[in-house]
Length: 414
Image 1 (cartoon, one colour):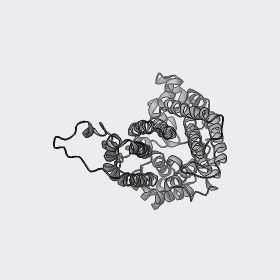
Image 2 (image 1 turned 135 degrees about the vertical axis):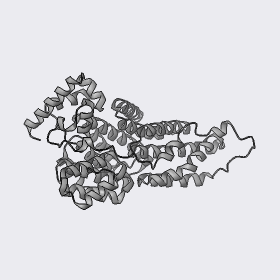
Image 3 (image 1 turned 45 degrees about the vertical axis):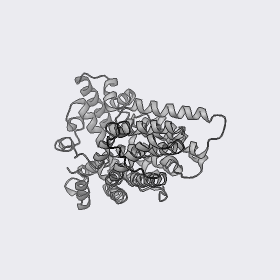
């Protein structure tokens, strides 16, 4: 998009916004952006390239996508059916509906109670759940949780006092895994519930860092809901409180992991709001913490460390429309030591960056490699599916068979 095209695009946004009876604040709230972002778009300062953002903008303005951006054909993405909702976590959604252990409050008249697993068995099951979450194996995750969550909820209320603290921490970790998984499948309302339960269990366990890690999950749920003000408030409050707590000493490695992760989610929030300078400032803060930490760790399953900071830097650059920067950072990273989810996420974001650059071959290669690592995540992740649809639009009738097959698997066809 040239400068003249940018200016023309911004003029159309302004015209359609006024016709819709919206001011910049109203439109920003609907988009989950800042009023400053809308102002910069209308003045031609910010380039809007991502198809998912263009579609959302057109929808909020109440106009067809091709009227907002005439370079896109009238019969393309805005007329596509909405992707079918993924249901691998439907069973987990049902699981967190209602009271988690009502049979403890209202025991059976027969007096029989389910046999409780040992604490050692519960530990093993929670580790399995996190492994499934990191690999985005959501169907198997749901199956595992059907017995684990009720057992943990029951044990949290009935276990002897010495064991209860440990059980509560396991419960918090389980709900964190569930919240993270709901976020990846764009089930943000369920992610909010799971994160809130994680916070309660973590506080009851007496582990404040576990509370902060749970707030990190809550902030991601708010981002998915486009409640960026709530996301920023939750993350900033936790970050400031933890900073104050360690102000007179060097933080422990575990504290560094939480501090750095909260800086990263704030970078994400600012990037989604189009706030370039604050996003980069938070990334720099995270880099400083990562250098102090000195290695990639997995405290509280946050996978924080120097490598993960740069993975987030790639995502931030893509969100800000800086595709070249994203590619330069991402292609230089070695991620073999991280989980399949983190590796796949980097490849997905690189795919998005190459789509922004209209480099179809490189984009397809990244997306296919991501699918090998985490097939369920790629096929259900909103941003990945949007990138596939945009790639289909970019290649048109010349789309290679590999891309057409990928689009079919992800239900992201033209």
